[in-house]
Length: 71
Ligand SMILES: [Zn+2]
Image (tube, rainbow, N blue to C red):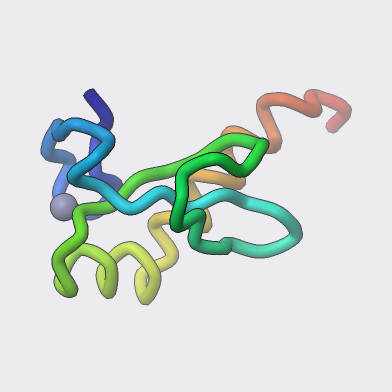
């Protein structure tokens, strides 16, 4: 189960769209790209919220920062 970054609901990965952070946030349609991912529901509302409010961006960046730990 994965958590949607917009509505925080837990859903099976197949019901969510995966995004990965690679220089910028990009959609991972087939959920196979390397790197840390964040998930949002497939509905427009959650996608929009995730992208517009930069929830995806910030949640992915947080992970990114944690990984590097270089300061
Ligand atoms: Zn959602």
